[in-house]
Figure 1 (cartoon, rainbow, N blue to C red):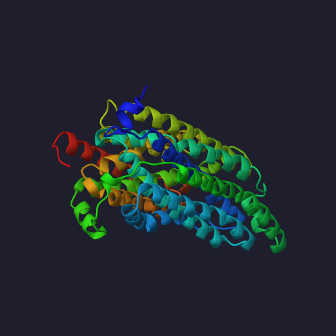
Figure 2 (cartoon, rainbow, N blue to C red):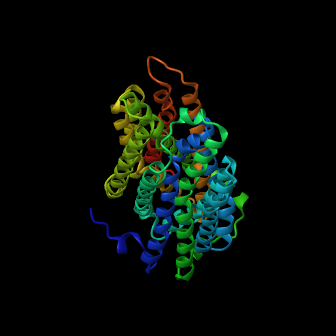
Figure 3 (cartoon, one colour):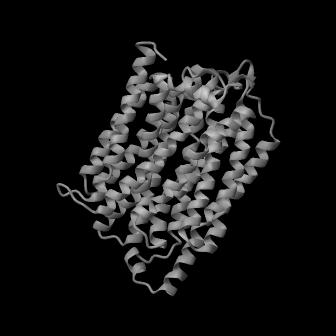
Length: 443
């Protein structure tokens, strides 16, 4: 499973991109941490502020809205300046957003935290809009999908660290008082517990804000190759008119929208799903939540291993075909998540993570085929598609809050019809992209 990184993946026109690749890949790990230290916060905020699941789901809404709002401004900035400048602005916004958790804690209200998440992810939007196409351009177009998968393989390392911190720093140290018991507390006792739990919750964000500033300094002091071969004087509207004519790109943006929605819902609501299963086995609520997060960590380990494996498999299986195969397997696993009411459903949900490992960078790489000098704006459109992470979690949360049953299946199980349908769209895109590129030879 050896990858010849120097000669095959990271050399272009005789220039080695190994060091820039390492620096930019560190950003992948950073936003992986931010994503997965945040996923369990839906449940945490719901408990701390005595809210419904739907209200708590505004955390992923705010988190992913920043991607949507800032993607094209970031692309315009990168188009005018450089990938390096875009990365640096992204790190500034990211760090400021993370550090805003400190004043939000002292305010003691929910909405300042949502604002902090929004600023943080405006930074992540700059980072992903800059880093993904920069990695794409660090070698030939033929090896771009494999290169993106290699860089993205370090993203789940950050995810794993984020999950471990969420479990050991946040969930373990929060008050063990149940959601129901908190609702019965008088105001002054509730405020004391809320203040304690918020003090616990903000700690990871303060640390990643500081790490973001340190990485900013390192990149600022490093010599990064220019991206003059991707520069263009073309305006945004002209580039968009050209991009929307490319069917492969249009469908790729749509597939990315549905994929991110599926990913966020699976990783967010595994806590609710597992908590229901483990409480039915007799566990206390906090123990059930922590056990669910342990399964989430196992899922991320599988995701990480699968990412490296899929990067290897892409040498032998065409990207579109492998994408569609894994999406179909994910649909099958989610059918088990819906139908099983015991631990078998949790196991199926863990399997879904192995299927997801390939998807984001592969959809990204396939969709950028043939976009030419529009690569930066095209990349921004694919980052905007992360809006799917804002749209689908509230829909799933509403199903959970309705607490309806069908054929004896609880609402938490039924809610996973949302990611199941999303993966159907991804499977269709993978198949169509494979047929277009390798059979009919279209763009």
